[in-house]
Length: 475
Image 1 (cartoon, rainbow, N blue to C red):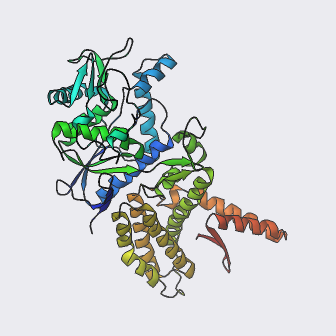
Image 2: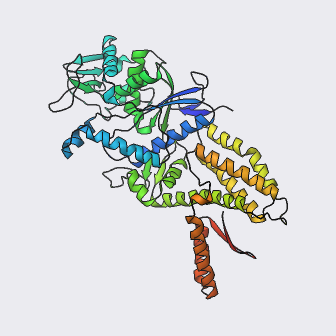
Image 3: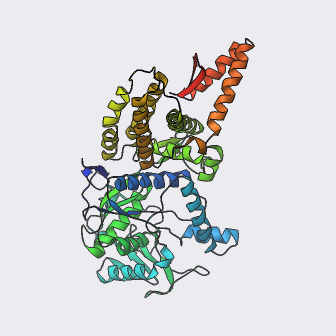
């Protein structure tokens, strides 16, 4: 089966056709490391981590490049506010980024190029655009002429004459057109600067990605990714300057963008007081739960963040997590129930098509909600088999289900506990709750006993009173 993905440029689903057989080259815009990563950052990083993981699962050799913008107005201004050297902020917050993304089980990129380490490439690209008439120097500044690129606005779907200057585009009297944007900015007093043919200065925001993508991925590559907020002006400007320098059709083949994160159905904003960092969220919810939450929506869809949606995600994640542990316990049971009928047929039937169902979901623009549904089917059918009693056929089916569950969850970057011994807390807590419920019932406190049962049911755990005593399983 072919993988289809949504191309922002064409606004339609397209079959993925790599430029080199068996290989995928990806460039994903990274963060400006001047503060703690927020959940919007995490949404983009997890989305493209899943895409990268699935491409590797499908057999592609993926070269994944993600930059850091380690020189920027925000870095300079924040450092000045704190009275620290500007270099200290990127160094500090890149380390924080790696620690927090590791907690979210994000794979390291193949390369993490820094803007400050690629001044020569950016200066050379800027000079080339000036020589070709696509850019012009004014004093110590260099601007790209947007009207020199006939297809400007194609990516964002905007008409040039109707546009307003976007974020990080300075409007001043020296530009030929208000939409022209800076490729090189002359140094202001006290700011860091690098030597160039136009005098000391530093690069504009957009030129860094064009220069680094070209250096590490060549004159053309497969996928360019980032958040929807980057479509304009950043990616629009990147595309324009790159195609003017390299030629039409020589930059990214597919443009992919993840959806926004809202908070209680409002746009996340510091001014609204609903701005949350990754570390703030992980103080309330474990990192695997946040990872699951970010996986639970298809990458292009908006996703709403709130305590309620995180609590729901936690309950769903626990169903998978405890389901995997339940299978582990069943497989470790030393006594096979010889009285059990051969009840493994339903699980074997599911196993026959489960991985194909997973692929079908992910092949259609990386539909993670449908892919997760396959994992829940595996857990549900396994639990039904365990409840009916275990014989040799059941054990074989459960072993296959367990291996497939862990493998497919891993493709999504979701870690489920494979062995009982590595996580004994959940079973111990369940034993405690079951004993408390038994004591309550013995004392005829049926309201408390029912409350324990009902509350567990709400989070997907069923208590069953059997001749062997009270047993628990995940729905």
